Image 1 (cartoon, rainbow, N blue to C red):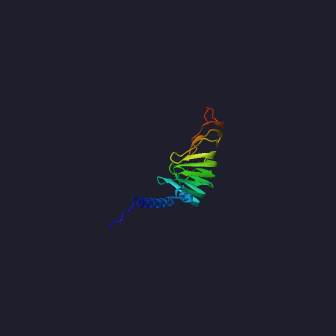
Image 2: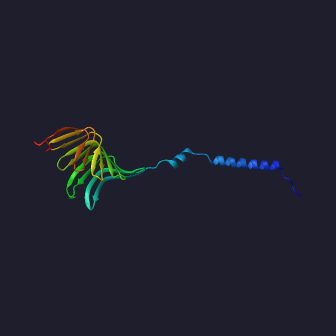
Length: 195
């Protein structure tokens, strides 16, 4: 004998099954804000080194020596190396044995991708001849060996003192220094050209 199942019993069964499944689905979709934050937060990788002594050479010749008490290498959107407690750099000439220029700064940040260094806070560049460039803010392009800034800068050399209110561009050896808005004193020869 066949048992007849009513349409209502089937619909009640499916309604109960759908209700229980829906409850389980809603319960499992609960979002924990801390878990979401932990999964999506921006992670910055940082390496730290102390008492740094680093050398830069090109074509088998030493070009620069950097010393710093602390170095941080940060990997985020842009990879950079930071010197938060000061740095000193000796730049060597073509002979690789004589220091041509040296640089001191209280802060430095090297952008590896662009081969540029941002220097700030009491930046001083001095040549072996005694020429001195000072600025609160200076960029150094490693590829072109050029210093530049759009901030105030001073340049003192033998017989000249130049002040620039709107920045400058200078070669690493300070043989060429071009100010954007210069004022100052320069000794000139009888022909009218600087000595």
